[in-house]
Length: 104
Length: 104
Length: 104
Length: 104
Image 1 (cartoon, each protein chain N blue to C red):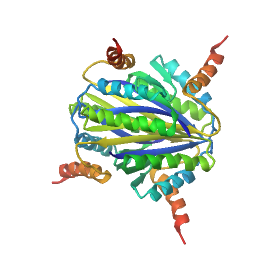
Image 2: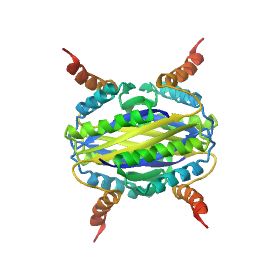
Image 3: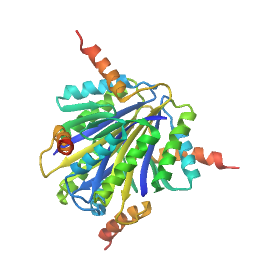
Image 4: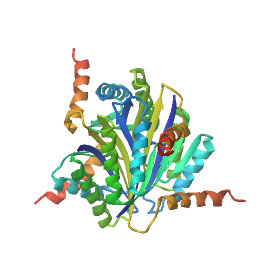
């Protein structure tokens, strides 16, 4: 079962700046070899369910190791059995609709 | 690593009523033996990380088996290393604050 | 347009304990007169869209006033035009299915 | 109060393909004049709280008008009082950390 997730890890008890923790998660995701895209409020990751979920766990472990006593994350999880669809396909299908409407 | 999650599974392509799918997920969670509390927009589940995440995966598998071609779920994930805290502790600590303010 | 939301407000930069901030949000919600149910990872609130969203805004304002320099919240928003359905109806329809299966 | 949100609108009861509804929401957001970035599992929007929330409401209204009898959306909401920070700043601060580590 393939999954596309959107992961946003929020360390608590480390002050107001969390970019070092977010950067550490990016390194964890990069090291996994999975496809991913960071945005301003999370990161999309796609791949086999167990591999993606192992990455989510490693992100929590890494952020705790960096000293965060508490973490709250949000995760959206998309699976489908009717057809293969990657992250870029999702964006492309919306953009195709938008493009066809705005063309002269 | 213990986790408290809030899980909301949304089957797509099955029509407007999803209570059979939600009920099936409740059965999956119940069968796991983990502590849980259903509310009107999801279910809180607590336990060891791997056990909780295995339940989330089985919910997706079960809902696909019921015929849903597509699922989008939302999951909040809370972990902490500073102390043990269960679902009921979280609610109790807020209610204690509210109660002390409203007492005469 | 009526809405059922699930709101989870996370203050950042205030240390690891956030129950005072969560309790303050409960007071904001209570003062609104809207129906609500707190659980271990958020609070369900139902009512007219604009009233519910005004409450969400006041929660952010109150938590900033308490000294939190940064807040990240998660909100699920459910609307429907086919029929009226309250928070308790949602839970009841799932429990009815579960109850009918487990009866002898 | 300025806010950065991440919005993901999920129409229910319209079948498995929701890209027309997502495209309609993109048009609603575009028409608002607010800054936004679409990704594979939602759209980041930034601006004054009331303007951003008005866009979220119009997205629900538009998707219901398109025939969806039910919608469930997820929204992350970030506010801060300590300093101005836009969507691109958030991404840039993480990338700066990653870049400095990977440089020779």
